[in-house]
Image (cartoon, rainbow, N blue to C red):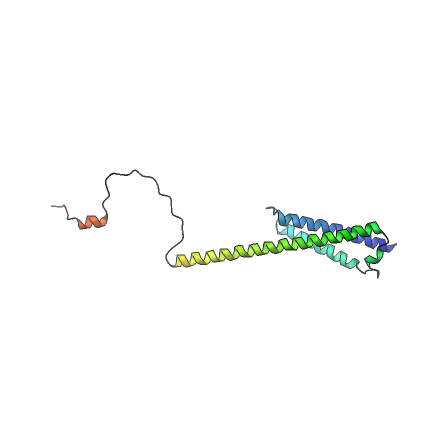
Length: 157
């Protein structure tokens, strides 16, 4: 019977898609320093493969998967998996959007800070933190300043 095989194939691809989406969610919620662009691309490619496989099952033999409901336990599991995959996909999309918004705000703040630093430095007022003052022995005698030395009469005879 070909119809139950299509339902089983749909079940298989939904399970695989659920796993990929959960892995993607884990990476979004808990970024790892060792996760690089290749990992993200692999997940995206796996998602696309599963979406395409599911799409190809819809009406591939002229009979919709919903008409294959002669196996209620499997059909109910497929429906539950579909709901779970939809929730995961929606949540991951929200997490990705939030990450993009956060990154955009950070970039905007960095640009503003860079513009302010350049403008301040261009006006001759470079922004820098003061260097710590080294402790030295203090004398009880006041040092003479150059102006006072210039105003005093010369002691040379």
